[in-house]
Amino acid sequence: MTRTWPEKRATDESALAWEFLDFLRKTAVLKVDGLTRDQAAAAPIVTSPKLTALGVLKHLTAVERYWLCIAGAGLDLPSLWKGDPDPSWDLEDDDTPASLIQAYYEEWANAEALKKLAPDATAADGERTVRWILSHVAQETARHVGHLDLLRELADGQTGE
Image (cartoon, rainbow, N blue to C red; front, side, top):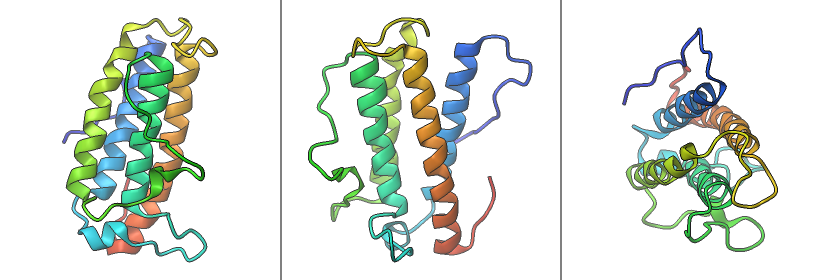
């Protein structure tokens, strides 16, 4: 997978926002890719027993499904948030780095529907603009990429952007 920084002399705000989200998405994948299932399912922070690399990736998939696809583009897809507390962090026995990376990729494809809308357009939820939703998902992804940085370092010592 090729991960590149967005255009330095960007003039299109919407394109730039999508490019930064793409950069963050790929960073998240790179933080999980190469880990064993045991490493990726480990919860090394005692006070956060659901904070695992797999859990973060599963949660980011649920974030994209809800915000970009359902609330944003109005796609008729089932929400991955069903219950309280948020079950998107919960792991199943068959969750692996490969399976969750693939699920995340599939959500990126679903989210392409939102790109067809103008940034100032009202999202399908009728409450927000497309710009707001895209900004929210980017900040949420960035926050969780920070978690993945630490989880990867604790799993196998790998550091980097």
